[in-house]
Image (cartoon, rainbow, N blue to C red; front, top):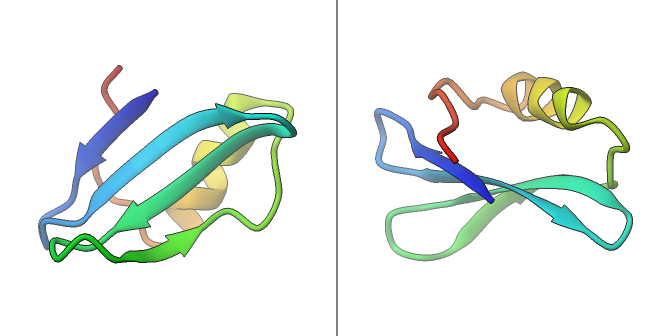
Length: 61
């Protein structure tokens, strides 16, 4: 799993699920406020989707 925190303090996580790569965004209060609606076969496609949905931080393994 890779993760990073953006300037708002939200945690972005990238992980491999049963159907491929997925991302989720968790607010500082612990609530999940965003997530991939599908699994991606390529990790980079998942990262690109997360960036289109607001991820601005660099993921770290």
